[in-house]
Image 1 (cartoon, rainbow, N blue to C red):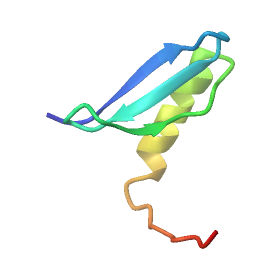
Image 2 (cartoon, rainbow, N blue to C red):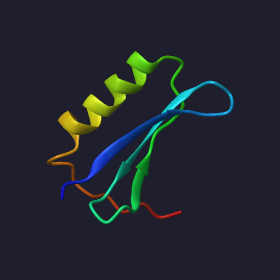
Image 3 (cartoon, rainbow, N blue to C red):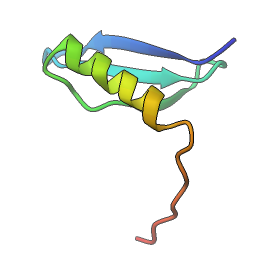
Image 4 (cartoon, rainbow, N blue to C red):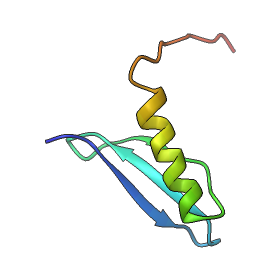
Length: 60
């Protein structure tokens, strides 16, 4: 089974999404979006831009 995106509205009325792994664990949570369409665009952006994303370690 593949991972999935879950889309919902928060208590403040913003649209948000989680990306869940196939085991049900949340692996990414979005910012709040003012519209459903914007949240769906965010999901498409993750789908499009993340497949070859590198990892960069940052010292804090």
